[in-house]
Length: 609
Ligand code: F6R
Image (cartoon, rainbow, N blue to C red; front, top):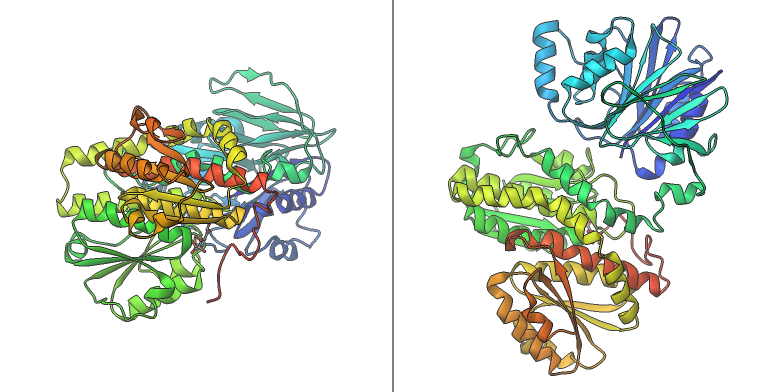
């Protein structure tokens, strides 16, 4: 995700900012930049790629100042490029800003500024509108101009601004994106994350939502949303830099599991308009295109493939079109039936998986239209696709995918709903019901994360089992595959997923007292059948952990343990059902002393065959 560092002190702000930005590198970024007030103007230097590219273009002594703001960008609106990098200036660079988050109504603001003020925009970003807004409202008081600009903005943001005419201060504001102020002696900092500051300060103020803050070399003043000054307790940071990068979590995987409510929210908020319609900004698929597809292929690898398994059922149900799901390494070599009436959906977190890329090229060669569901903006898959549906999960650092998967699922629902509505294959009532349920997911996932201790206790109890099965029916089957993969890849336990109805066709021969079985029973219309499957397994002596929706207690009579997930419609259950499976895998791996974030033999991005 993007990182912000601002410094006001005695000299050489650029050096402190670079130090801070380097401490945020672990979060992933694609470009970096710095803005400083120099000789009555703001000088902005920015460069795509690593921070070392930026370092090379700021060496000259003329580019220096005791105050400045810097940024590492993880592209959201607009591909990674010098122009799209932050900081952004207004037209005469009398104002510069850095921004984390999204401005949901940036298109509206852009049109308004272009029409009424003749503003010409340089970048494709949502963030640039903030610099222009502040510039238009600026009348010698940066704090006032920032407050006026914020009143026009909707979305989530942490913004830091500087003005050429007030070269002694930074004004910052936060709404739903983190911001901390670092307290020094004769200097002060502002940053999006504590690790950026730890080289210079250990005392910080944690800025809260809707607060505005003014930072000079000697003062930090925090204002609430009514403009009243706020007294904030000093927070003393005791963690080391490594722990701070993980924001107090022991591993990136656990941090990313906990980021899912936010990631799911981000994916939804960018695509659902106030009137409930789905916004396909940047996607050029027309009604005629959608009506013309007689087949969809979803192709991916690993966890992304498992998201496709759920996607198949959802899209078929909503858009009434046959969907085939395939692993990319098979698809690319099997001469599949693909033509110009095929929609090919590639799913990939990294956007660099070689097999997925090769499958995409093969589909394109045969005339298919390619829509990709990708997390990394500007990646190879996104560049080679006709249209891209970004997942907005933010950088995923742990090798085992968690938040990328749940956001890929959200994209599947949104694509299904959009196609269904466009084709008229779903009723408005059903559409609204699914939409309402999707909007409730961030809170439901958050609620479930609160039962982490209970699942950790189960992991402690069962971590020595060497054979684990995951079974489910319907949409639960896809979730079983994902639960099984999570467990095996980080704990090295031999785990296996199978459609519950297939058990007695062979696999049940393996069931014995030492086996552990996760039985996913979240689908109301298949619930009784799952209870019967659990009975069959229990008859062979295996231990069973059931996963069911709140209130579906019948399974307690047959399973040894039951994990309840919040009640929801069957279709969206995977987003909540996978959470306990991720947590279980994490704690089992921890009990077994495994290298959780970097499991043996695995890489985050598989760019070879
Ligand atoms: C498992 C995992 C992998 C990836 C797979 C595809 O936790 O992360 O199975 O899902 O390698 O990677 P992407 O999504 O980057 O194409």
